[in-house]
Length: 546
Image 1 (tube, rainbow, N blue to C red):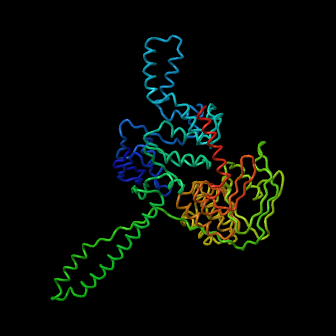
Image 2 (cartoon, rainbow, N blue to C red):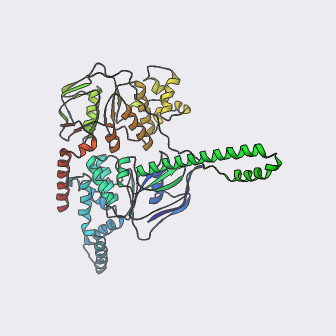
């Protein structure tokens, strides 16, 4: 068990948390939610001891081990992958290294023998002999193949490092597990594996994630951060949302009845307070009036942007034709002889582990890159707006937000442009901020403003949900569902894909294309995915046997 007792954290004059009291118990998975800036990651750092609160204390049941997902992807670069995972249990790793040092001595003494015996006993109690096989199983479950296990962390890609650090956090059955955005940079098989791991995990889990589907799948409870307080709900994210909305509705209805009663009492008092025969009744009603207290309806700190893509022109029947398109990058064929035709009602989700292939394909369609072979043709009625995965170039200038967006608008009126910025939660004074200093989430909202103001009838979006809070993801999700044009997009957000797409295209590791007119959930249940899962499971079992 882990509990926060009277936790207060002040940053300057602002209190991020104020007298927070919450208890997290064994056997439950808590989804920690809240708007961007509410302090989710900060609260995890307080719980893990990485950050000291201004006041209060964190109490952990004596003897219990806490593990958390490391965010520094370069911290373990000098170490082998397998060692990095085992470091998730500090004490076990210390024992292993001390044993190695003792056994490597040329002048092995009696004292060394006694110490080695003590270490061996503790090592056995901690299931140390299974440490390497347990670490290997975790790595293979997350998609890190066996031939990578003995390489240095420095030799891995960024996404591979993320998986290793996640395996480190999960290693050794910790009593308390803290995970901050664990699904970031994970492919579908790894996310599914992690979901099953956490569902079957018997100890305490506290997780921060913007993935609604993931929270619904793994969480037994929801801890909602709002205005420096944390309110605990029994149930997953959807249950929290329904419960919180119902609570607000009940409070509004209760206040409405109270306001009607107040009005009725005030009218009686006003009418009869000067009447001697009614004075006692008027006094009684004054006392009743004083007792009525309206429930405080403090608005949530959550803010939902208004995302509405309105095409300037209706799209025709001829949308996009791709014929035998191929592309090789750094000697690897990422696109191999791809062909398909888009219809005017298609909303296509590109899925699969080959993210570079998807990004390359989108760049080719936008004219930013040339294919090696094949061609593509857009219909004459089409107009396109593009959301790139890497937006660095877009904001590498000293323009203000208003001037930046104005350059993409046919109407050069500042008031018109600020209207689009206002929808995306940029108040008037933010219009003079320089785009170079914007946060990741602010840059994403700027790009979505640019897409809205374009009036395009085809939207191409490469991981648009990265850096967005749950409220913005929900708003974007709803905006794409309503959009009457064609969409080509990719996202790791399961619910986002399932509710938006009516066609799934997967670019395989060899560059080939699977194209299905279906929903995402139906595709995941298809024969193709069942075969992949079987191969994945066999590989994982082979790794465990080895």
